[in-house]
Image 1 (tube, rainbow, N blue to C red):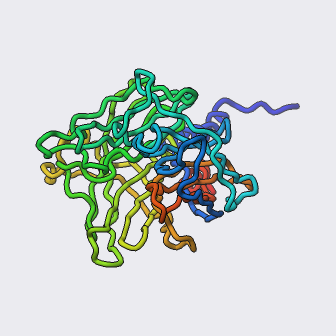
Image 2: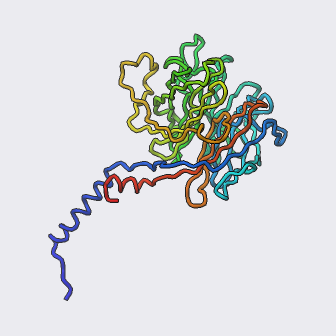
Image 3: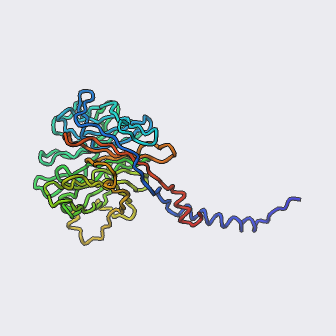
Length: 388
């Protein structure tokens, strides 16, 4: 005869399950963590490479289209050599490595303004690019402070290259005629990234706004602002302080020193990123790849000047060095863009970095490939609960 459990015993057995469920529901789910990174090869495109009557170069940002297994790389040519444009690239990682001839351009798209015309000479300085799920890309431009051309973040059709809309730029980022506020020339919106849930877009100033502090100098860091947009409302939402690492150049030659934050990459929907910090140190480049978290960082969107707000307890974003690219047995170029790529054989995710050759004969367009080792949120959660 089957034994029938009494109601109290059922409740007694159910209580632990209920408690564990409550813990899981109320505990914030940890993000996936990158626990390792391996270099899997590099390729170069030579300066002067011609493709469809344009010179391939100035590639300052890159984004990945998983549906087409294509990469889109924005050129920072200010419509001087050819009209402003982005390229479609094939990057072959099918064997789990990037071989020297594993990158080739397969398409070029001219950017068209709201009137359907290409951007006139020196009216755009496109630096960042991010793909949406709607067949469009967002592109950021640094503008030109010296010519009173404002920076922008605009959405363009992936197919036609035509401008579709523009995001509003908060006033504190816009340069003023008296030179006391806003972005510094050529140190503005280099970075651009969109979260995988398509709800938020992020960019950042490459160096501090004028009212926020000094630009990067030898042994002195700079205070960049990360700017968060809500893509549902198309409005700026929050801002965060990102402090770069101070860099010591090989020689005391300030004339040939430059440093800053050229790109950000959202790795999840919970405020976790990868960032590049790139420095020209006189005789070469110093490139650091960092893990970044917004958790606990102060929203400074209501702070017009960080210099005037020193007494406030402003917490910057948290970051830690993931990889110092100087450890590679590769002569580094001017790395400015990064994007996640496809999964590699074995299941690990790929990461691609790309350089801006500045259209200079002594430089090259350099593509670096890495394999990321990522610990899943579930494993991290189990470890946190000590159930693993």
